[in-house]
Length: 247
Image 1: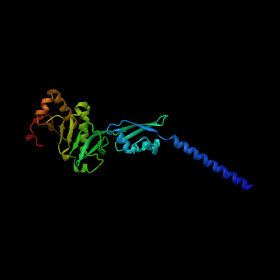
Image 2 (image 1 turned 90 degrees about the vertical axis):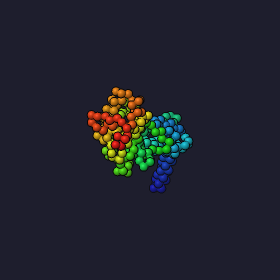
Image 3 (image 1 turned 45 degrees about the vertical axis):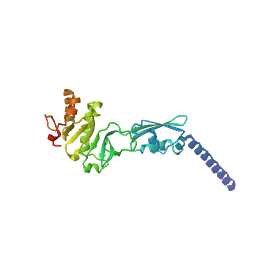
C-alpha cells in the first residue's frame, strides 16, 4: 500500500514539474519582444540610446523583458523617467523623459550639464547641445564636486530663470555666465561685443533692468558698439570701454 502511495505521489510530482516547465516556457515566449520604438529623445538620437542598451538589431531584444528594458534606460545619465508599452504584435514603445538641465558648466576643459537639482552630469559624445548658457570659471571648491548647492550655482540659476521670465528669445541671448572664481559675475551675449557686469547682488533685478534698457534704446547698435555695460551699482548704469571697467 505504501509503495502504491509513493509511486502515485512521485508521478504527481513529475507531472507538476512538467506543467510548471510548460507554463514557464509559455510565459517567457509571451514576453519575447519583437521590435522597439523610442520617443522623447532630444539630447541624443534614438540610436545612441539603443547603443547604451546594447540593442543593435531587433534580435537583441531577446535579452530583455519589459521591466528589465525600462530599468536599463533608467540607468542612462540623461534619463529621469521612462514609460514602456507593448502592443499585440510585441512591438515596444519607449517614451523617454530626459532630465531638466539649466545650464552647461565648463570645468577643467570638460563640459557638464547642470540639472535643476544642481547635479553635474558629463556631456556625452554626439549630444545635441541645445541653447544652454555656459558657466565658466567656477571656484575650485565648486569644480571639485559633482553635486553642489553653492552660492555660485544659485546665482547662475537666478540669472537664467530671470532671463527665462522675460521670454525665450531673451534667455537664449545669454551665451556665457562667467562666475570669475567667486568674483563679480559677467555675462556674454550672442552677437554682441558688450560684456555685461552684474556683480553678485540683486541679480534678478539687474536682469530686468538690463532688459528694460534694451527695450528703451534698442539693442542692435547699442550691443555692438559698447565694450561693456556695468550694472553693479544701484540706480546707475555705466557704459564704456574695458579700460575703465575694472575687469
